[in-house]
Image (cartoon, rainbow, N blue to C red; front, side, top):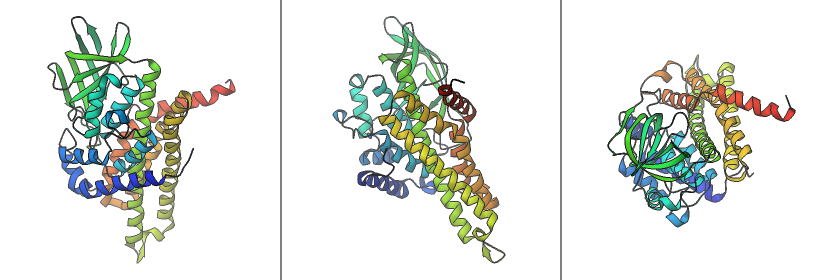
Length: 364
């Protein structure tokens, strides 16, 4: 496992970072999307597509870049650093990996091409929790509810994992279909667009069977890339706090000269760097390791989520009262990290699973 970025990966990181700074800053773009259910606008999405970011994981035969999850993690970290609110994780990562893990790429060639060129936005529903039921007759319809679906308002297509008479399968659904209703959830993080979806005889097209190991691989990939996003958010709010500690004076000295503040900054740095090691390993495992190591790496990354969220909390301690004001960005980063800590369940259940897996080899 190489811990250093290649020249091409550095170029990818810098290109995405520059694009987000110029076109999607927190003040100019992110805040304007708070009340927009889609979380993005067509011009910005096309800009990401022109960079190759939307088709990063799409195979070359469908006009994508055919890159690795490590490369996707680089982009995800920059999106997290910029608090990007759009459907990139749902579309560019979850959708393409769902099709890859279920061997449904050829059946969704047009969808993949649309994702790569930015003309189509898609999302994935039902990766965990209760799923809709697929009823097959003259056609296929889906019935049921899904508690949480990301970026449903932005998507034209939803890939839905649903249970049928022969097990779980992956279906494609037009989000404008009659019978599909959704409502936006009011969460702590306004940059994350999560929805509750209800399916009432919604027409669907079956793509492929979804074996348990394929679903687990998809869940792991989603967790790992979200961890990279959270790493970017934590890194940025830490840097903001450190720079503030250098310039804010109290009693005639920068507050960063006081030992108590220095300890806070060191705690943030230690937490971010420990998270970085876990994310790098998890991204590598998703590409190169076996299923067991990949899953364990994903569990580790998610188990650390609550600890990573403390970076946002500590940063606001450094900022003081100004960090809580609506005009300051620090609380937005804290919200992003808190939403990651609860995404797909809290850290406690992952810590319990991690502990069980670590003691199993010892026969205890």
